[in-house]
Image (cartoon, rainbow, N blue to C red):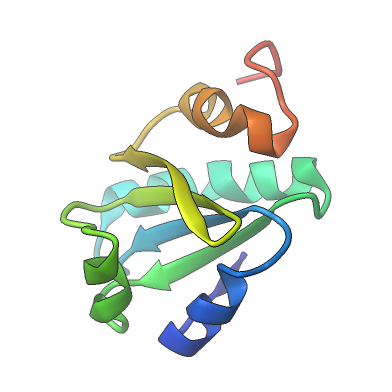
Length: 111
């Protein structure tokens, strides 16, 4: 999962593929807890969906643009627009349920 700067974010969000963005910070323990889940989903989607992170300490303007007030916040973008948002540390099944139509995964996939 790659990390995005403000400039990279603006380009990545316009991608033809959906983009899942993890808004996080190095000091955030729940952020560290969900990172392996997102990395696993990235592997399972085999390039159909892009995954990236934005460190809100380094790029607070990106977080502010999408009203990220609590972390972790994970937003799925499609066609340049936010489509789904999950706030807080959640189990894998929550990500699959919320992002499933874009990920090409179903809720019955292992959680």
